[in-house]
Structures are given as structure tokens and as C-alpha cells.
Image (cartoon, rainbow, N blue to C red; front, side, top):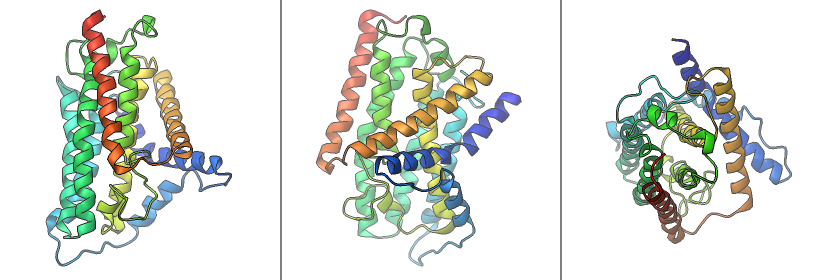
Length: 306
């Protein structure tokens, strides 16, 4: 019960802070004070106090989009281990369910965008569909790198099987998995170099253009769901790069929090030091991530699983 409570507390309370750290890092690089670290929490609470506006031309699909995307992010967070090897809803094959929960949320987000009848939102939905189709192979290949040595598509078994005693140069495929996961995390969360979450130019937006017509609590669900998605995908990177104890405990909590903050700072550095890719270059970026993960997986089979 205590482990589940800690898992839920981290999952539900910590994610918006990552956006605050990213924004603070970008402000530091720009020589500004920037918004407070807790500004994302204030934004979500402010949106909950407002009312939602719905067009007469939209259907239930438009209203269901933000709710389903948030619900799938929460369920994925309950499947993914955080400060220990296990998770509250873990089961045999939960890796596959984890990936397709995000796919389900993305589908409803795109369907809600198309339901408005807006050509701009339809354009964003088509781009989202194309980029997500290219990011999915990289995600599965990266997860396969950690699941094949364990012999099962289950997070708990995969994290327990990580050979921390000889993780470094003798197991380079884990670095390939980490690089591919980081690229997928940037793409799935619409971050630079794939997309710019702060842009207001409709012709260049991907994710943001799909949620232009959402307001009030619906937009709060979208912002909170995006933070959850970043946190949950980041937890995979933390487990892959840091020796989180299988049994959890205070040390596992500290490693998870510290690792998540480090990833947020890294994202802020990336967004401060490089420009967004041209749309025609984004597929090359995602295919490159898949190639890196494929090479890592081939190394697993060539050198033999530990």
C-alpha cells in the first residue's frame, strides 16, 4: 500500500514541475529570470476555474479527446515503474499495453482536432499521425533492447535483469536504447527539434495546432496530460541510466526525482542550443532513432543477452 501511495504521489504531483524546470533552463540560457518553477501548476489551476466553450458543429468526440488523452497517460503511468522495479498495474506483456495506451490517447486527440472541421487542426492531425508512425518503431526497438535479455515483454522483469555490475562499455546497446528513447520522448511530447511548444504560427505547429479550440478545463487536461506523458517516458530513461533499486525505498525515490530533473534540464539545454528541424527533416530524425535502436538490438543478438 505504501509503495502504491508513493507511486501515485510521484505520478500525480511531480510532472508539471518538469515544465517549470525546462522553462527556467531556457530562461537562464536567454539571460532572463523566466517564470516561477511552479508556474505550470498555477496555469492548470487557473484553467480549471474557467469555463469551456464548445462549437455547435462539434460532437462528443471533441469533448472526449482531452479526457481520453489524460486517462491513457495516467494508466500508462500506473503500468510504468517509477521508484522501483514493479508498478501498481504491472502484468505480463505490460510493455505493449504501455505503448498503445499512448497511441489511443493520440488517436482521440487527432479525432478531436478533425471533429472541429478546421483545416489548420486537420493539418496538425495529419502531421501528428505521420510523425507518431515513425516514432513508434523506435520506441518498440528501444524497449526490445531491454526486454530481450529478460526474456519477457514486462517492465519489472526487464528492469530487474539490467546488469548494473557491468553496464558500461560491455553493454553498449543500452546506450543505443537510451538515445532512441530520448528522441522518441522529444517527438511524443512535441519538443524541439521536432516541434516547438511555444510557437503560435499555425503553419509550423504540430501538436499545438490540434488543441487550438480547447479551452478551460479541457485545455487543463491537455496540459496536465502532456506533463504526465513527459514524466512517464522520462521514467523509462531514468530506469535505463540509473541503478534504481528493484525494491524501491527512499534511494529509489531520490534517484527518480533527480533523474527526472536532470532530463528536464537536458531538454531545456537542447531547446536553447538548437533550432527546430524543418518538417521534411523530422522523418529523418525519427528514422535515425529507429536505426540506432535497431543497431543496438542487433548487438544484443550478436553478442548474446546477458
